[in-house]
Amino acid sequence: MHTNTLIDNLFPHGIDNKKISHLGIAAQYCRKIKLVDIINLAIPGKRKIDIGTMVQALVLDTLAGRSPLYMMKNFIKEQNCKVLLGRDVDPELFNDAAVGRAMDAIFEKGTQQLFSQISFEAISTLCSNEEIKYLNYDTTSKNVYGEYDVPEDSAGPTITYGKSKDHRPDLKQFVVELMCVHQNIPMLGSVVDGNSSDQKLNHKMLTRMSNHLAKHGIEDGAFVYTADAAMVTEYNLSILYNKLFITRSPFTYKETNSAVSRAVLDKEGWEEIPPIEPPINSRPRAKYKLYETTITLYGKEYRAIVVHSSTLDKRRLKRLNRQLDSSVKKVSEKLKVASKIEYFCRKDAEVAAEKLSEEASKYHYLDVSVEEKITYGKGKPPKDPSKRKIASIKYLLKGIVNENSEKIKLANEESGCFVLLTNTPVTGPMAHTPSQVLVAYKEQHGIERNFSFIKNPAILNSVFLHKPERIEVLGFIMLIALLIWNLMQQVMRRNIKSTNSVVEGLAGRKTKTPTTYAMTTKFRALSVMSFWNTRQFNQPLTAVQEKYLMMLEIDPVYLLFYDGVRGKIDEAAILAKLSMK
Image (tube, rainbow, N blue to C red; front, side, top):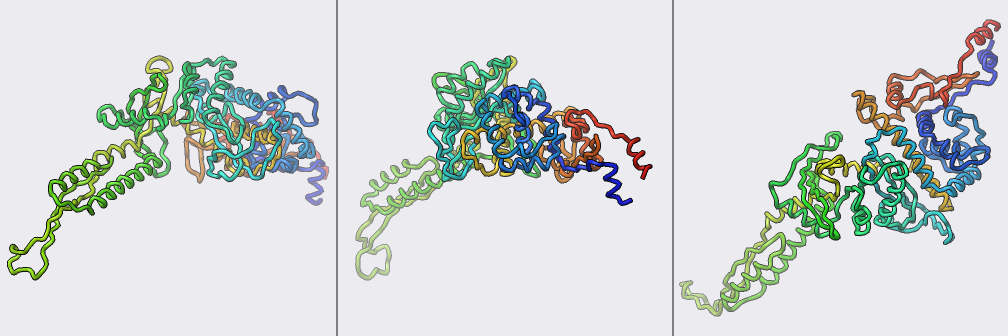
């Protein structure tokens, strides 16, 4: 009997072999946070494809590299939907019209409200309570191509020109704002107008944040709000009077500059701390020293932690170099002009030299002296030079430009400083030492890794949606994908830390801090074969894969059966069929 005939007799419905790669894990995290249930409860209705399943499919498509929305049905056709969505679905039900209608229904319900419900369920389920201590806020912009001329009564975000964080002022954009817990787990987020101001977005987010947390029993004073320097305005500080915060104090305030100057001049008040960042390859880790003082802004006193980093702030260092160049040029120009003036009286020349010396710049000064310029009479000089006739004596200024080394040294130290502004207490359950303030602020930069995810062309490629409302929903889908991506990393790292173990990262290196991307590379070839009433992997899981699944808190059976209910192979029936041939 031919092999194909035998297989056809044994498996009349054929063998379906489809790659699931890391999407099977992502699908289980969607299930863990009850993504489908939350959305269907919020947007009920009888549809051939419920909105929750549609959203989960869009999220998995995003984590697979995101297809254009009009090609969603092709993505679905290539997937094992029983494994990824819990049931078989007709790919034609994911045509661009159906996807568009689902996006309109999501927008009508409200993307901000929906995402806050999903994220809080996720954080409550998969993150420990202490991970809600710090709330980090930031924004980024996403460029788009095209005119995007939309009606004035459009309810979606305005796609327009604004302050481009990608340095592309020639392109229109929309802005994505994020509020994260534990560095990079998004809790609140939305897509807003392309010309939105960070300062105004901050105070809107503060109101949303308080209302959202209060709804879930987390009161002001139980968390610390961290944000960048755009938060520091009179209005924002006024509404933060009963909320704890940590931010960077802008150098546009003279009080900030004064705090740095006081710290640099005080040689005794500094505290050196060990490096707080993990080592990166062979690059030396930044060393920090801290100095605590106070700053008064808008009539209220705050703690100010002056931080000096061994890796100087490049922008401030460049500005200092420009100032030094300007200082040299300024003093040199004065000397050049003054050296051309001739004085007939030494006393006048000495007075001018003293005055020129006093007109030094901030970083340079002039060492000025007076020189005689002798003019001799006409005729043949006598043999005895001392008897040579002098026609006139004039006096000129001659100088040397010198550095004020002490001031330049202080300025270099100041250029390596920044100031953290906080109202956290020094005693009590929410007390923060200066080093804890710095560590909390540095965690805020974890949110910037989210922006690299958002800007990654493989995740959010060119936007070709004509309706701003649907761009907002696309942002909503992207935020859920980001939530799932970061939750997988968070759970992995937490379990690796608690078990004091390591896993294989990129290039086979052992690591205690694997990234989600590193994990996905270990499952690229994972496929599931479906036949009869059961499924199995195309090849046994490797030890590396099993270790990752353990750290992700996923039983391998859930990668075969969405709900964990294992199908069973009827081995007796197969043997009976084989014996008959």
